[in-house]
Every structure is written in C-alpha cells, then in structure tokens.
Image (cartoon, rainbow, N blue to C red; front, side, top):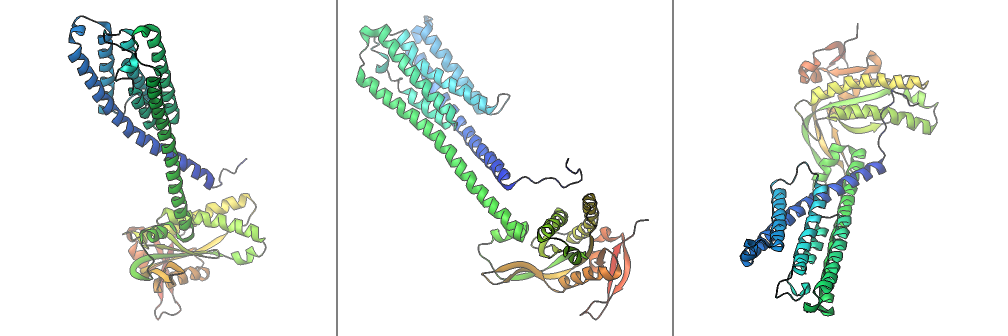
Length: 441
C-alpha cells in the first residue's frame, strides 16, 4: 500500500506527450471542421434558395395544381435551408457538433436524392433519363463536403452512400423509364468517374488533414518538450527568456534581486555511508520537494551546489514583491523539510537539517561566459552576502537567517522576524544585522 504522505506521482513524459498530442490533434481537427461546417451550411443555404426559386418560377402552375413532386422538392429544400441557416446563426447548442455533422451528412444525401429520384419517379414529358439532367453531378459536391468534415469515417460513409444512390437511380431509371432513356455507357462512365473522383478527393482531404494535424501536433510537442527539457536544466523562466532572444548576448543588467541559499547540514558525512545510487535517489527526492516550493513562490533556481541550492527572486523577471516571495519561500522551505523528514522517518531514514540565508540588494543578472558556453546567472555582493548568511546558520544555530535589507524590503511579511544580533562578515568592514523566525512557544 502506498504511503499516504508520499509526494504525488508525476505522469511519465511519454504519457504526457501522448495526452498532449491527442488533445492538440482533436482541438485542431474540431476547430477546422467547425469552420468548414459553417462554410458548407452557407453553401447549402444558397443552393437551397436557388433551387427553390427555380421550382417556384418554372413550376408555378404545378405547385398551384398541387403536384406532389414539386411540393416534395420544395419542402425538402425549405428544411435544408432552415437547418443550414440555424447552424449559421447558432453553431453550438443542445446537439453536439459531432452529432450535427452526422445530421448534415444525412441532409446532404437527402439533397442528392431529391436531385435524382423525383425526376425519374415523376418524369416530365421532355424527360430523357436522369443522366440527361444537370443534377446528376451534384454527387461530387456531396462527396467533397463529406471530406471537409475532417472525419475519415464520415468521408467514407458519404462517398459510399453517394455511389449507392447514384447506382440505384441509374438502375431505377432504366427499369421504369427504359423507353425514353437516352443515356448510355458513356454517360454512366462520365458521371461514375466524376463521383468516384469526388469521393476520392473527400477521403483524401479528411485523411491528409488528419495527418497534417498529427504532424503539427508532433512538431508542437517536440518544441514544448525541448523547452521543458531546457527549462529543467537552466530554469523555465530563464529558458523562456533565452528563447525570446534572437541571439545570445553576453553581459548583464543591474537589478534588485532577493537571493536565497540553502544547504544541508552534515549531509556530506551521511552521504559517505550511502551507495552512489541511493545517494542520488535521496538527494533528488529532497531537491524535488525544495525546488517545488521555490518555484511555487516565483523563484528561479540558479544552480545546485551538491546538496545546496541557490535561488533568485527578481531575475530574469522582476516583480514588485520579490523580497516578500523570497521570505515566504524561505519559511515554506523550513516547513517542507519537516514534512520531508516525516516521510524519511517512515522509511527509517535519519532526519535532514538545513540552513537558509536570504539577502536583498542589487546584482548584475545576465549571460556570463562565452558564446559557445554561456550561463544565465547573477553576480555581485548581494549573492556573496546571502551565501555568508547561509553559512552563518551553523554558528548561530538557526535554520534561517535574513538580512536587514531583506526584512525591510519584505515590509509586513518581515514584521514577525526577530533580531538575532549582528554578524561579522568576511570582506566587510561593518557587521550585518541578521534576523530569524521567532521560536514557537
């Protein structure tokens, strides 16, 4: 049974990539399919209006006489137009988009059927066969529309049903209207090739778009993975800053920052008793929890020094409350170590002790090194003093030491800190007043 106090399991990189890929592909396909469906609805509406006007103008007398064929055609056209207009006005609603796609596929097939069957079921006096009318070729549009829905299953279904309807119409035309039919193999071959070409185009559109979406998702995920991996090595904020720049520029800028140093006490002697593999496991478990606290408060890990951590608040991104964030992070690290030690105790591992030093002041932040091997870091007296404060926790016996500059910059957040006296710092002519967390009573 898993330890209830254990940190939550991280999703594996491969699993996360698969989930992101599926989400990106689905989002891209649905977004484009929605736009395509609106375009198809507009085209269907215009065609329905055009054909309805044709029926009303050319067959006014038949409509007045109540002929079933013309009223059937006009009714179906009206339904097609109304449903298309409704989708344009309200593309989302109680019916899901996927379900709407199926409805519109059926509607397109009904429209193709109306273009074929009424004419051969109720032929006019001048009727010479369904393939002699201008409507037989509308099946091509139906097949292409099926592909624009960007679902291969719908494209195949649309193409299959269109071919079946075309073949059925030809068979019924020969059976019922054989004496007047004036089309032959040439016309059948022409329309068959035309419809099969439209069907092939529709399936290719759906398949190729899906493949393009997968390729685009793969490229996006590769870029995100590279950014994530880069961030794991140099910090995510530093990685984002580096990626925003067209080229690496050496040098830096002076800016106010809060610098935090933490280090484990007595870990070196403890580590000598561990195998290298066990040492890495324990150290990584400790660092993962501590870094999570620093990141949660907006800090950037500048570097690891064995079991030590140097974190910066204010570079590369400066915030007005960097000092407050640094102080809160320092306090949270103390609490996090207590929780970490509780988990270690459940595995019969000795507790760890940590010292933390925090200082606030100006430092130079930027790329240090060469164009071939640069490192984003901060340098200056502020960094040195923060490191000295961390080292002084051993002598003073406090887990956390904060400079007066940090306490004042933190405002109300630093009000609870208590003075721990003055500290003589090597390289400084004046001693430094230091503060710590008041002991619990």
